[in-house]
Image (cartoon, rainbow, N blue to C red; front, side, top):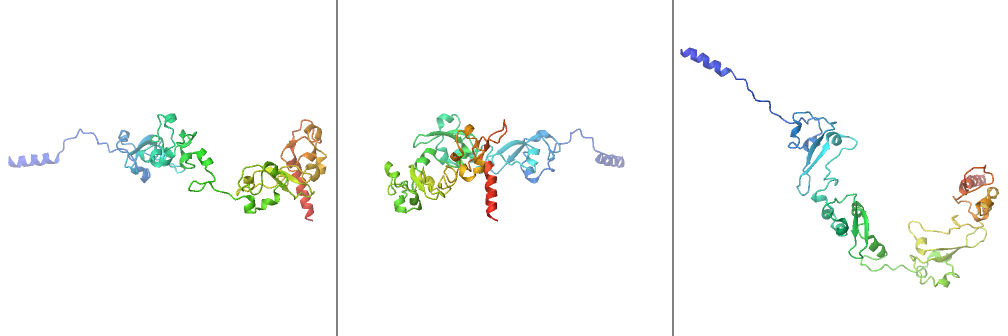
Length: 327
């Protein structure tokens, strides 16, 4: 009997009763994704996906998380796997890039010097804590100094001119300590433009070289004596424009912006001037420059033809004339 019991006991030890338990869910398989995407996979919120295999080009929206917030706040967002896997424009954390708002990237936090111009009344209920520092939203601004009000996108204030545009314009030409920058007069600077100063016309308006600064915005009369035909070139211009570092203005007659006997169509290209339709145009070939882009009627044009610019007709002629001089 003891032996029999021993045999039964051994049989019972080797036999296992079938289990009714369901296989445990291990969660979605994300091994096909890039390592940085695997690190940002939000396991808790993606549990509903079961044991599915997540492929890089999937268009299903899933949850992601980022732990790079400077304030240690959770960055959690939804985006398709495909959107985050594309080689041509892989998307990152919208909070870190400033596309979504977080405490660390608000206007109030990142640019308090700009936030002080926020017009709380007109922007209500929006506040500097509700927009990112790089937002393209157009909002209202107000200067606490001059009370000037204007509209501009947030990012234009944080990435460009951050102050009041009216105050900036009024304070232009001032030193760092706030005092106005004094520009020298033409007489003190002994400027080269004094050679073109009109000493006959300017005194009539009380303008003299010793009371007109180089950056003055007064209209001053000038004379140019470079006309090939000995004519006087006389015009008005602001000294500031004539002294501009970016684009100083010269004699408008010499550059062809104003007409003179030396640059008229009649003087430069008489053969083309003969084709100028004075009656229909209301002006003569002597009253337009040879380089103007203004369009006119021409005698040789067929009925129904459109106007053509003087420059288009004379440019080819001038090139031919220059080429002929080379030989």
